[in-house]
Image (cartoon, rainbow, N blue to C red; front, side, top):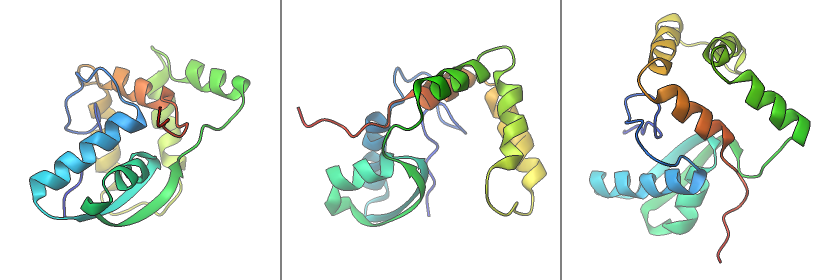
Length: 144
């Protein structure tokens, strides 16, 4: 099993110039090529797994999706509020206050994991990448 850290998150580099669903979807087949065989993709939130499966179906054996964002949602006021909540200097603090409210059972080692997430957000460029990822459009990609 392999787990991909999306651009600017986890152990990945934060120097990418873009973090939208299509760019992230391009990273998935590259990892599959590196591993050398078709893969099952499990993804949540970002819709990159859906796009990767549609663009390179021969590389994907199946999809498991948990709350994928494959369409933009929320009105203009909601989107503005989210932008204001995640700006510096309070953005990371707001996110870490929200983090325990994410759905699902907390696994063993959750507090250690939460500490690693908090530390990761302080790495050079990672908060900026987090904000860019949150602001990406989840509109279906155009075939133009």
